[in-house]
Amino acid sequence: MKKILLGLTQNRSSGVMTPWRTGLYCLRRHVLLEQFCVSPMLQKTVTKFMRKLSTVSLVFSLAFVSICVHAAEHSPVGTWKTIDDETKQVKSLVKITETNGELQGKVEKIFSPPAKLPDPPCDKCEGDKKDKPIVGMTILSGLKKNGDEYSGGTILDPGNGKTYKCKIKVAEDGNSLEVRGFIGFSLLGRTQVWVRDQ
Image (cartoon, rainbow, N blue to C red; front, top):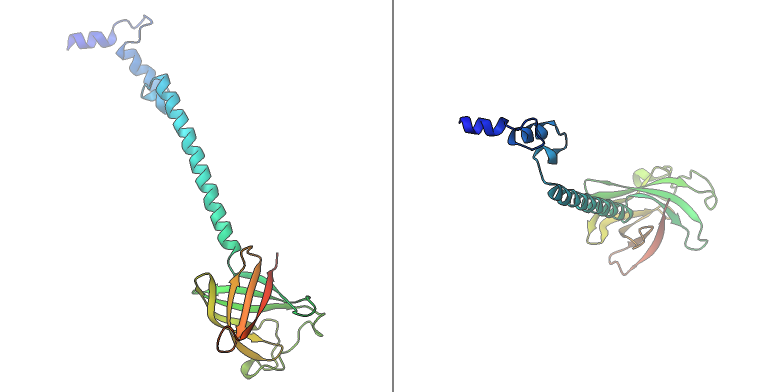
């Protein structure tokens, strides 16, 4: 035991790194690698590895953000401009929201022109929507995701007061929405293209 203690304490004044001085050196360092007395070469290797790991983490983070943005752009949720088939003018703004996996679309604004009034009533609607303001009215409902489209819902055309079966699909660019209304089969219908309101 004496020999061991002597070995730890001898040559304190010399420049030799005895086990005792090595221990003190380790305790005085604040860098984690030096606390464990890692060799300079190993330090460089670990540092390079940590840098590479940081780079990989950054790449994955950016990729994740990109995927999220891409998914958001290709979601029908948002505000859309409805376009007149003949004049190509913007007729209204419809805001689509999602609740419990179902989409609903509510009229946010009517443009006048082309409409005669900025807040016209739905005089051709029936039931509880009869003569109610079109602005604030829900015209899309019951749409559920089915592959790359949403279907199984209905759409109300305030222009004639009729309700049709409906399905919608976001275009590849994420800025166009194909809205198809039909009676019975999808082939017997008409498709409108709405444009995302930026």
